[in-house]
Image (cartoon, rainbow, N blue to C red; front, side, top):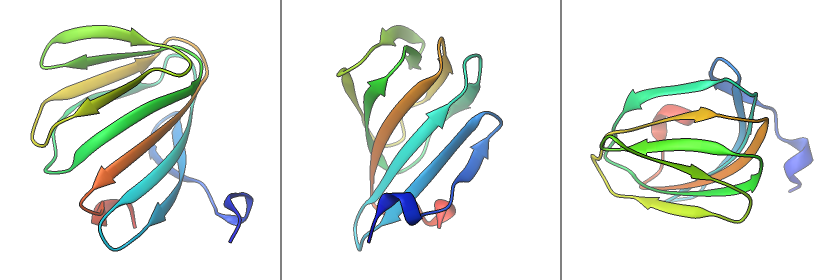
Amino acid sequence: MNLSNLKYKEVFPGLKGKLIHGKNISWAFWEVKKGSVVPEHSHVHEQIMYVLEGEFRLSIEGKSKVYKKNDYVVISSNVSHEGEALTDCKLMDVFSPVREDYI
């Protein structure tokens, strides 16, 4: 398989991704337009976000930090978080268990 053969799925306005699902994890490759917002939410999935390109402000339980190229963060299950792309971004997320809502 090749990532270039996967179709994009737009999850929020300005945030589209290519998603791969295994038995226990989902792996997402996001392209995020500058100014796009991921509204505050939480989920049962543990999440690891990695920044490939750009600057992304992420707030976890009300504490904000700007993540840049090669930064990563682990977000525990059921923790409230939200984000905004300060520039065009390329992000990678891993979720466990599988994000059934993204299939």
